[in-house]
Length: 143
Image 1 (cartoon, rainbow, N blue to C red):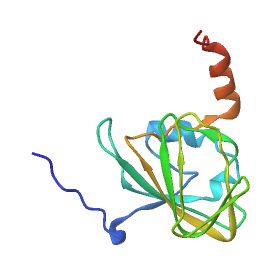
Image 2 (image 1 turned 30 degrees about the vertical axis):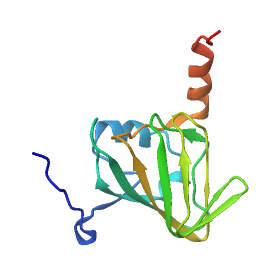
Image 3 (image 1 turned 120 degrees about the horizontal axis):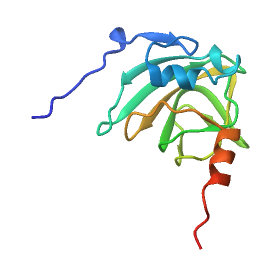
Image 4 (image 1 turned 60 degrees about the vertical axis):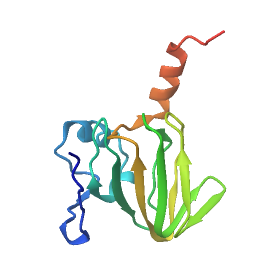
C-alpha cells in the first residue's frame, strides 16, 4: 500500500550547489560554473524511477545558469523574485514547462530568485550545450 509522504519546511536541509554527497548529483554539480554555485537548494521529494521529484532552489540577484538541459522534462514554478528566461520575465506565481533535452538558461532578477522544480521522476542530470550538441550529432536522423 502506498504511503503519503510529507516534507515540512522546518525539516528541509538546505545545501549549497557546491556540496553534495549523492554520486548522481556530484557528477552534475561538477559541471556548474562559479555563478551557478552561488545557488542553494532543498530537496522536498527526491523522486525515484516511479515517483515524482520536487526541489526548491534559491539564487542571489544576478545568479543564474549557463545554457544546459536535463534528461527529463520539468516544470519550474517561481515562488519569489524574478527569473529572466530569454525575453521572458517570470515573477512569483509564474511557471515554465521545459521539455527533456531542451537547452535553456536563466538569470535571477534584482531581488534574487526562489523556485520549485517538478520532474516526473528523479533526475539530477545536467547536460551542457556541448554535450547535447555532440549527442545530437551522434544520433542518426530519422528519414
